[in-house]
Image (cartoon, rainbow, N blue to C red; front, side):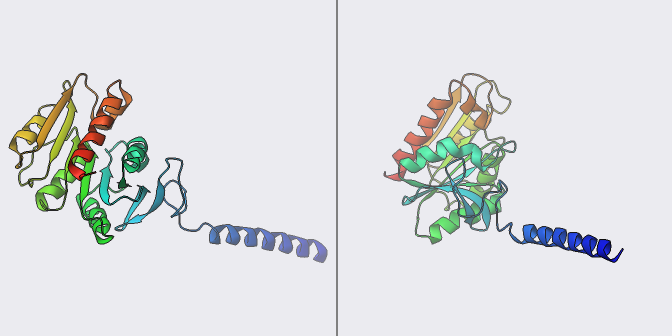
Length: 223
C-alpha cells in the first residue's frame, strides 16, 4: 500500500509540474495566437501601436491606419496593406475600431515622426473614422472610406474619397459626404452591384477598388 501511495503521489506531482509549465510558457500573444513582434500569415507584424492590438506592414514616412468592418478583423486588410506598404507607406490595421483607439494609433505613428497619417475604413470602421475626423478635423491627412453608413458634420478640408455600391442600402451616403465635406478634393464613386464595404474586394470590382485606393494615397501623399 505504501509503495502504491508513493507511486500515485509521484504521478500527481508530475502532472502538476506539466500544467504549471504550460501556463508559464504561453508568453504575450495577439488574438491570433501569434506572439507580439512576430510576422503573421497575413504578412503583417503583430504588435501594440498606441495601445491597440494591431498588424503592421512597411516602414515608410507616410502613415495609413486601416479600420475594418464589424464582420472582419485586422488581417482582412492584408492584401491592401501589403500593396500600400510596397508603395512606401507604414500601414497599421487595428483590431479595436473605436474612434478613440483609431485616434491613439494615428497619434502613435505621428509620435514616431510620421507626420501625415491617412485613415482608411470600411462600414463600421468607416463610421468610427468619421466620428474621429469630425472630432479632430486636423488629424487625418486624407480619408478613404468604403460604404460609410451615415452623414456627419465637422470634417476638415483633407482629401476624401468615398466608395460604395449602387444597390446597397447606404449608397446615397457617400455622395452626400463628398458634396457636404469641406475642401476641394472630395470624390465619391458608386460601383455596380450591392456589395458592402470590404465585401467589394471579393467581387470582380475588387482589383479596381484596390487600385483606386493605391492611386489616391499616391496622389495625396506626395509619393
